[in-house]
Image 1 (cartoon, rainbow, N blue to C red):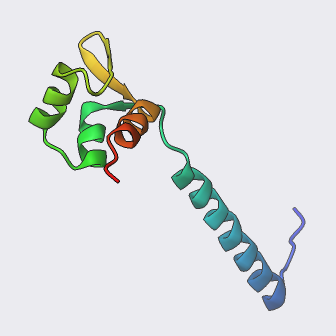
Image 2 (cartoon, one colour):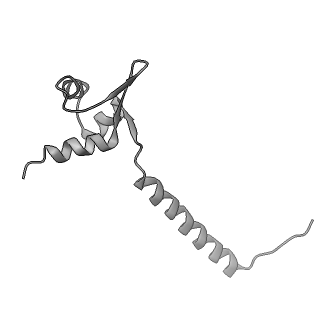
Image 3 (cartoon, rainbow, N blue to C red):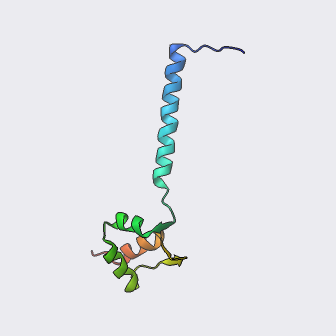
Length: 88
């Protein structure tokens, strides 16, 4: 087995490149919003209670999909509802 040694400068360069790559990965990940959210996610996103979310569904203000008893909300629909109800 061949052994490769690194100088301190090479190791420091590797460290900075690694940090740069990790930052890029984290930025890319934080920009990506999931398309479909569960009720708990929507409650946290909008800082609302389960009852308020239920009312938004019942009044047909916030569209949703239901699959085998689990309710899902489209992220883009949430943003659209917020934009439509924006007070200027």
